Image 1 (cartoon, rainbow, N blue to C red):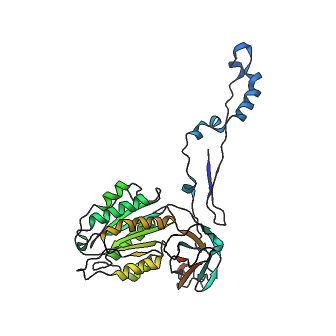
Image 2: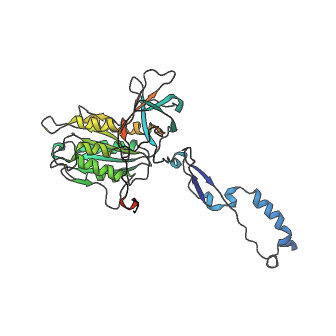
Image 3: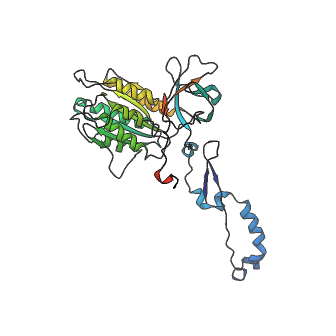
Length: 361
């Protein structure tokens, strides 16, 4: 039974069309006689009608044993190269997530100019998500709380999420085994978070760079990083400017959780705030380690409640410039709604002509 998945040009979710064919093998009538002297040839028209009227579960026994997927497991977003995709969180004035809004209630602006929304959805879609965890010496005594927070996040997430772990001190380590790039298993994630002890210096930017690169290997369109660190960096080859540029490819949302040691002179909450703001995530600076678990649960709810908005920019010049984005929402019955999404992106640079493309004299 072939399965066809089609994505229309108007960017609607994929729709599965199932085609089934029932085949009947005919035995030679000379080899089959029924009780009472009735021949197979005489009953063949009757049996053909019964086959047509039979339920699909009888006509196709393989179909009845096939697992049925839920509607959200089939949801995909196909995006053209020139589209900008935003994941937006809507909050009321009390900071409570707002759901049930429609496309007509959103307005998107790029560099102050209104943009036409081409795709809109509000679905709990699975994501590819990486936990980037500081294991430098300043994290000693905090590891148990961090592991518990990571497990709480996994338990509150979409069961179809692809998760991975990046542990770091002055070096960067992937927590999962080499033959397991992603997992949805909570026990595997817990083991990955616990693999190394806290020691050494801090290469935060290198860890984020490695995680952003690994996100590209995930099969889900929506990409998320959760960074747990004090924000300091004293051992990276990358710098903050490079990381902020990299975060736009693959359009990752970055949430940050700052765990600070008052005696640590390298702590830098500004970095954590900037990474979150640039990408449409949120920065959390808890005063107590006891807050980390509920924060991770809140992040999981935030991810699962976001609106997806796509538009084709009116400015299509490949000039490499930064384009600022603003999303507004107006809904009757709701006052002072705020929208959190990425603040902008860099347009692709102009591609210089290839030497082979030059005309020969």
